[in-house]
Length: 151
Image (cartoon, rainbow, N blue to C red; front, top):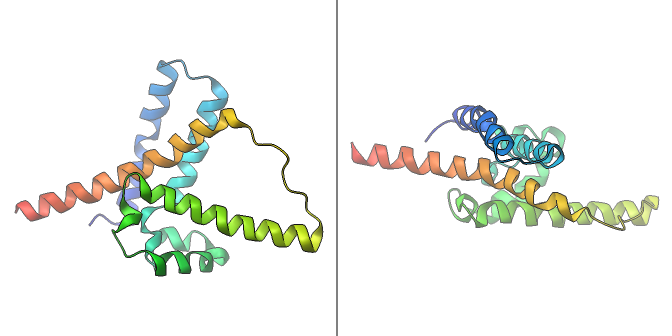
């Protein structure tokens, strides 16, 4: 399998291509910035390899790394977490559950208010920015696996 560094280099190395395609297609500046931020964030912090405890992706979470231990226990490596569709969905759902729990504690303990609205027009560029590097990760894993089996 490619190393985490190879995955990250491929994902971040193709970002200028995706941004150029978006610019060529006439995507406005704000959605393009949202896409780029989500893409970089997903490449660095939401790797399909979070289903392993000792990975570069988990280490990047530093002190919050422990949050991903239950995720790693729930999903076997290269299982559903490496599905092109369901993999990112599992990580997003996991983040919503963990984030919701943290926000609820903050709300009860410190009175932090819940957000009253969500900017719906930002959902699509953020989701594309999250899904695209995950798709590249999975395609790279599968491509290398096929090459090695072919030898």
